Image (tube, rainbow, N blue to C red):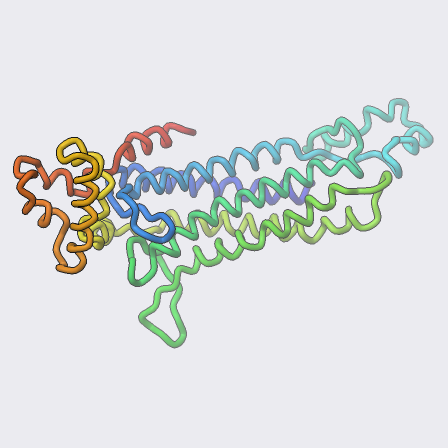
Length: 327
């Protein structure tokens, strides 16, 4: 518990740094439109501000869980079988008060009972640390995708070089975070498995906790440190995001057009028209807006507004604002 307390006291400030950096990114890019991707494909437009706000929400969730676990870390003093018998035998006038006094000396929480085989504190650590690693891993996964050469919508502030390929700037921090996130669940699983502790002090279950708990503290702490550096130095490229909104020849707003054109043309006609124009947009290498402009029934419609992907981000701005209200 003392090792965990010291480790968490280092981890929490790094989460705070990450949260602040993401709040800044979310505010700065509240209205920076970019493609929203589902199942690897462009879906509808979103904003980078909303994405950063989502990352920040995960970080705050991790912070809250870790803070609760840190505040609950208990001392352990129970004697051989959790009865405090030896303390009475050696002269303690009130053995039941000893664990609380011991906890005060260590700066830990006083336990309600000796917990040799009641491993809730370790299980809680496993859960919050694995969650933190996974939450930070989500940020890393997005950065790794968005920083690919062919996407290039973000980049690490100082990527790592390659010994043989001088043109590369590898996303080192995101890679380290992703590595930690992949390892953490299995370490947590071992700690959860140790909840099944037999008798009044188990053979094997308690001992199985030692190495995985240390590794999990180290991995989560390292991921938090790297996340702080990653988010503080992250370079955002709005021009690339804006350019990618046009990769589908304007079809990224087809959802909006389906809703807007149905009252004008009828649902069946609107659906058939958009299906046909989607095929032609790729075949003729033309934008959906250009093709729609040739449809006589739409001559009085403001197609520029309807086909502008930056004007179809829904409530992304308001959702970002709401997320940033959380402290």
